[in-house]
View 1: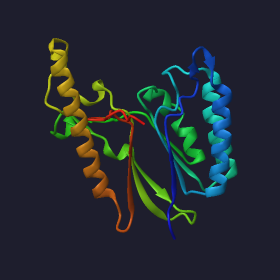
View 2 (view 1 turned 90 degrees about the vertical axis):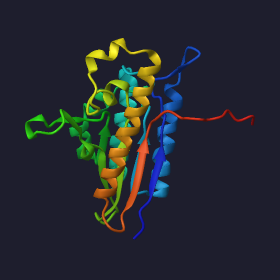
View 3 (view 1 turned 180 degrees about the vertical axis):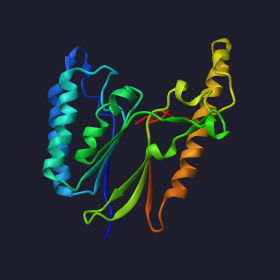
View 4 (view 1 turned 135 degrees about the horizontal axis):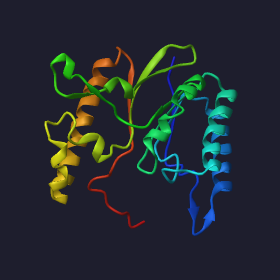
Length: 223
């Protein structure tokens, strides 16, 4: 049996454009997306960040998101949803209702986690890779894919910890040095996560990597 997923991102719920609320547009989009889910019947819906336009979205914007999740589950109880925080989102806000959303087969991932393993004689902190690994299943409940869901990585989350650096000295670093440390931290975290995902992947299982990140060496199209 095949496994299918639908990928989307950057909803920016709550956004205003030239002073005009886009609430009606966003509501229409979510209605359309529900229709696509009904027609295509994917096993999973992946939402790659920037669900909201600001870190403190309005109640109306939050209602749009959570009402959509409830309606999607009511329409198709077998559908699994994985959503991650983008740079416009608050990672903590995205994860806050995670326990409730899990009852609707929705995985809400907002931040990377570091585990204090000093008691075991190891480094001060190690990356909690399992937190971002989400098994996905087909409609018969059989595990078919493993999703590595990486939210937007902020400098405070990837520099210092587990890198052998003294965070107290960060304020004295130049902007260029901080930028280099950030890029190195992002690369290091991704390397560890991908390695953990490959190790956790079961034979014959698809590995899906989803993230919200910076683009490097991109060019603006003339078209």
